[in-house]
Image (tube, rainbow, N blue to C red):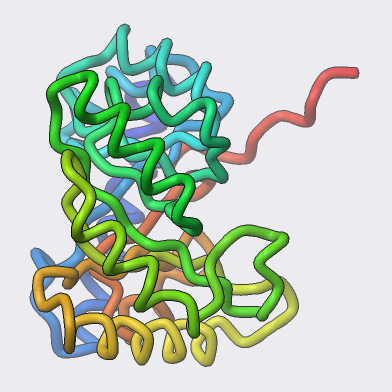
Length: 229
């Protein structure tokens, strides 16, 4: 079986899961955007997914993302990983959206990068659902202040929130909490309607709680090979 055939079959299976989850939730399928997470995979996989109709692709490391974005520029690139401020200028030069904005310093750095590149960058606020911001994400109590900063920053467009369900917890409960954070945010920033939540193992629970974007890697591209030693 060719790699294109493998990816086509996986995409069909993921699409079936998305359609079923949307039906159970009483939502139209078009409410949920699929983002293919291609970390550690070659740019050729991205090109094949593009040819199969995938329009949104996500990465979590700047160097890898930058190289793939140069090789396959005709998709929307989403940066979904933790981001250091010294990488913000680079990311702002190619990303369509950054899903991991979790502190004011990063807002400032992305704003400067977007202005330098003469681009508008969509940003989502990453929310910590386990109360430990050291693992990435802003505490829910800090979201309003962070949202105000992002909404006011030139070159940025606040579009919503993102979270990862903590390991060892019920993802349905985690995503319900994220939905509450999103509802509070929309009260003051009605344009921030996006909820980026759910991955290969828990996309159904995320869609049930209102996710508008799901970030799927393994279910599309297969298990990643172990890191070389």
